[in-house]
Image 1 (tube, rainbow, N blue to C red):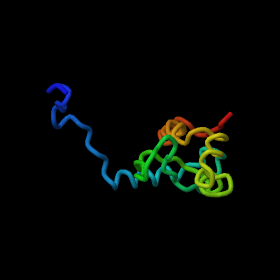
Image 2: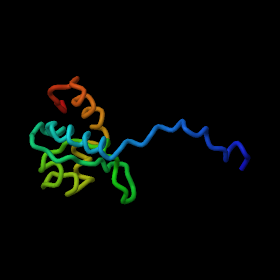
Image 3: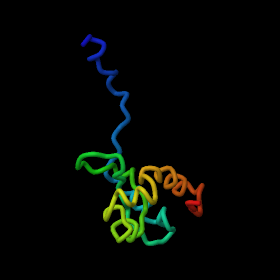
Image 4: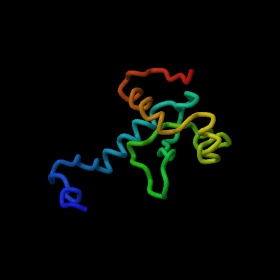
Length: 112
């Protein structure tokens, strides 16, 4: 390996890691949204797990609102991830929808 391949970028240019308080505030805002699958409220805040391996928890900013049934109920992602993804797609695909809802650009979500 050459020196350039091992070289790290300039220090101080990395984005700062968000604080835990900022993550908790974001999750509180997500909890105020309706379920991205059915539109029901109240919801549970789900940390996205699609396409992830290992046990480390996803960022608090990679969360979507799911009703109890779609989170850990009979049709929930934690009941059967494969079945949930086959029916609803990857949970990470809903992150842009959540961002639009939080920005007020999307007032009613429809999967149609």
